Image (cartoon, rainbow, N blue to C red; front, side):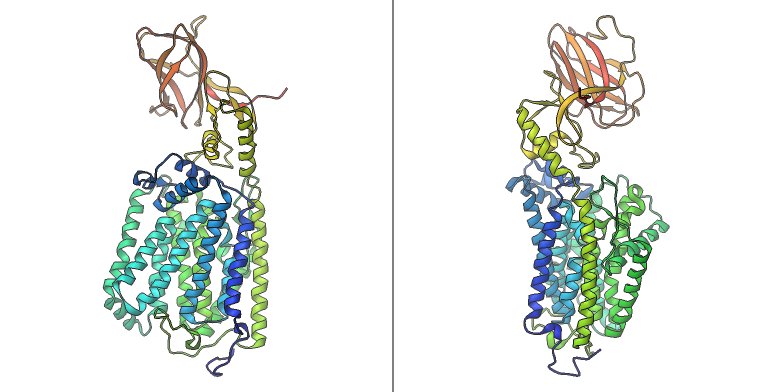
Length: 626
């Protein structure tokens, strides 16, 4: 390796002319185009649609913004959903543009951050290219929900790091407070960014402060007011997030489970990304965001690459390289423990190979590679007051000679090609997302039938919106699309939406009926004030059932209906307990997810006289075509 200190004025072949700025701009532009094409192969999915549906009809007041979002305290994301629906409802291209803009801004600011830390060095655009096309980056941006949350959080985190450079030099309270506020806002965008509080602390102590350990600790103590100002907003947001979190399904992770998560994350996600992996992904026909699935050879090559980077980093920057590698290691540790504590009972080791949970590792990993392989160079440092302090050592630059530059470019080029192969294979799963086709077919069918079409309000296919999401029914999707329809009305037999969005006639499949012997020519006779308890003929498994009441009476009446669950709890139908009964009707009433055991009917008049010919628990399915 050649030393730029030994040859004053010598410029690396990778830095000739304006190539440095041009290369960074080219990397950002190429990633923007790549992201757009990749994300546009799919559509909204899962929590995207549910969260957008939740924004419809709300005002952006605190009562809406402060509600938990997917079990998390997310006022920033709630505000984003509301804005998207208010400005351009269901405009998928707008969401792509926002995600691409956030990521592009992050890339440019990351370049500025690295320049202020190590100077204008050729490794920066090369590592930025690897970061932009890494398998750690793209999958987290394809889902709109994670893409927006991660994009905002990542951008705010890089801004916090830039401000941290100034704080490390000045120790001013306002700079410390600014860093804390930015990390707090990033955490409100995606709670995984709380991990960056620890990353910034290590970055300051290990890479920004200089001198012995005692001198660095003295520096911390002399800046204690600034550190306190930094900690206060982060601590306040962390406490609020903990108090507001939905702990359903949390727990169950033991010490050994945590180690297994960390090991799997490093071997199957981070290591392969160093060589452009994983190259292979896992997913079935209904998986649109695939899982990391590197083979044994890829895992081994990834770890060899990591060891090689450690050795090369030690040769280039000494102990500083180990401090730089602490940044991604802390992030992996924090992400796996944080996600594991919340979701291990549900997902277990799948957490480690789920790409969106690895997204936060990409940024500190890129920084570690840069900072471990390139020591700060005074000759290439900016004159900005918040540029990093320099350790008193000579600079050894990768690519300092033409031969070395060719080797470095060859290696980086090969990894970039491999990373693009991995990304293309991932987007094959993403392209099978059925959302766009299903929504278009459903909307077209409802528009053709007219606004008074009567539909069963069934769940959409779970591959499109999971039943764990609060808004996953046909009515939620049609409300998002702005297409009017009626649901579960007694005037006619409702149609049902098929798995591909077509409207067809329905058949009602019975799971249970009234257990008592029917009254001749009547069924279940309701006469007088009640209440009346109607036991069911058989146990029913948990599900989102319909209650179907086929009835007749002499005059319209009003009743209140509740369902007794198997555990004894009493629940009302989804749209409320009060039903207005016509003289002759078949009412279909949607129920919440439960195991129905009996039906309780309370009448509102002593003169009521209703014959419930059939009381059924079941659900609609497309009728066989003749």
